[in-house]
Each structure stands twice: as C-alpha cells, then as structure tokens.
Length: 192
Image (cartoon, rainbow, N blue to C red; front, top):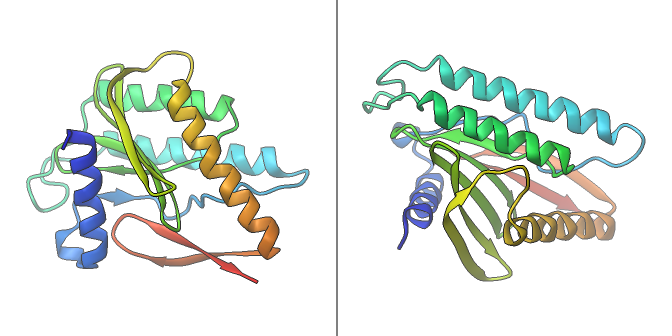
C-alpha cells in the first residue's frame, strides 16, 4: 500500500469512527462539491475558491501541536504547491475540493460523492500524489510533478466524478447540501 492510499484509508477510518478525539484533520465544511448551474455559476465557483485559498492561509498560522497530538504546521513549500495546484483547478473550472491538513504537515484536497472519492495529497515541493475510488476501482499515482496542467488520468477522474454528480442532480431535480458531517467530510443528500 503506498503512502497516498494509506493516508486515504486512515482518513476514511477516522471518519467512520466519528470520534472527535481522534481528529488530526482541519476541514473546511463550507465548500460543497455541488457545482451550481445558471448565470451565477462562475461567481459561485470564484467565491468557493476564494474560501479555499483563505483556508490554506490558516494553515500557515498553525502552531506546533495544533491538533493536541504533536501536529506540525505544513511547510511553506507544501502550502505554495497546494495553492499552485488549486489555481490550475480553478482555471479548468473544476468544482472546488475540500481541504484538510494532517498532523504530519501534509496538505490534501478531496472530492467525495456517495461512494466515489478523489484525494490529492501534497507533502513535497512541486509534487503531488493522488488516490481515486471511482466505479468500484481504486487507483492512484505518486510523485506527479505539479506543472501548469493537470495530469490526464487525474483530470479524467475529476471530470468523471463531476459528470456523475451532474447526472444524479438532473435525475433527482433537487439537491440538498447536508451539513451532517464526520471528521473530515461532508455528504451530499439527493432527494427525488
């Protein structure tokens, strides 16, 4: 099991435990996965990205032991690399992810919709790793250089998750963003 998948598995285990004492993650519960449609979608997308950048800024202000378990602040180069990747997502109109930070100083972004999950992790300057669980398939890649574009496989995965989410919204005609949350994730509830 590689570092990316082990982090994702441990985060999923933590979320299923529902015990806040085990929390080693800061989450932003104000960023829904849903990409709103209509004339205000670009405005909404821009505002959601603004919130995401603001959340990353808070990671710069973390002190040692920020989580009560000897958590360390992410190194500046990790935060900068994460910001660079987020700007690429924003330019490609990818729905904004949720951000989190681990006690080891790793920053991660994730998208979750029902049983589908994509996580992108940053623990080195200009490199990322990603983990995907889509269509009952699990895959990922380590050591991906953060450049001016998103790797083809990751972009395909993000587009697949977005298309699936959009199709579900169209079928159900109504989407409610459910604020019920666990340690690191929020869930979308679809109503027919």
